[in-house]
Image (cartoon, rainbow over all chains, first blue to last red; front, side):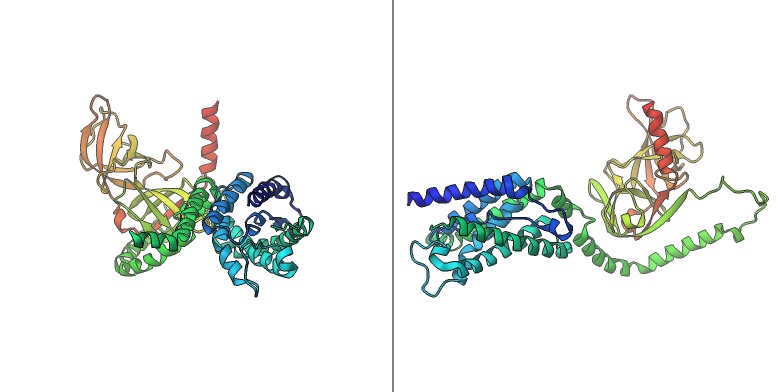
Length: 173
Length: 276
């Protein structure tokens, strides 16, 4: 139990630093590639154990978003997105629930559910997260075209990064 | 009590979610200038559209009086056309006329939101940056002065009307050309205060007040109103004149935004002089 908390806390901090210090500053300055943002920090919410209380998930998401906002200098934008994703995570999980259901100590990882399931989970989660993030960034659907371009560009590269992360570290819980 | 506990057990997470989202959006609007502008600007997209459709109804109900005033104005403008006057003053030759080059041009705009009973009143019109409107331009209609452009978006602009504590207009008495500063004390939408005119000048009730033309905002000679009350500032050597506004700001439909072509030149000259 304590090891679980420690691992998740460590991942939480590691992802914030990775995102805020390294990935945030990576931008490509070439036509449509400039719309590309590498976003991996939602992993900290995605990889929480399935049985985590919903209230705790929402609070953790808020904390994650606010801390990221300090790096991005955009108070509230990431936090609003994260709180929504934290709130909706249980619904996503129950939507793609595998045939056997979840057990008490299930964690949405490759070791437990396999590559394909994790890939689908990541796609749904990141798609929603990025679309919401860029919508809130623009704050108006007048620029719906730009929101879509940003979402699509960032989605592809972020999902690749997240899958690579999961393959490298291959967390068990 | 049991119901309350049941309610929180059931909807507690949703309430927490809503609460945190509200905090987030508060932060977004408070600290991100781009989003704040989108949210606040009354000349922004959605509120502009809403005001516009609301105004379409209002305008329709006021069509008769509008067409009357347009007709009146047409008649007056026709009277000023060249063929309506006798040109006896000067001989036109092949001289390039640099004296009478047009200085002011006017952009006609439709009022889509208006208030007169706030401490600071603003008017929103349906012409913006795209049509050449810039902050600081004067706004008039056929009966007199309306206000000064405050903020401009792509298609709309907000005007601080003369019924706004921050609007100050340089005004003059038409009879003797003495000038002062016209402002609003926030009381009645029909009366303004003209100050800074020295006491030794003779002022009568009913004197006409016009714009002085000393600022680059309004041309000289636009009707402001008439002196309704002659009073004195206690312990100072200036008049405190109550001016009855000639223009009825509660019935605005169309206004003209004044584009002064010499404005930049005058402004930069003034600034250079002050800095020296």
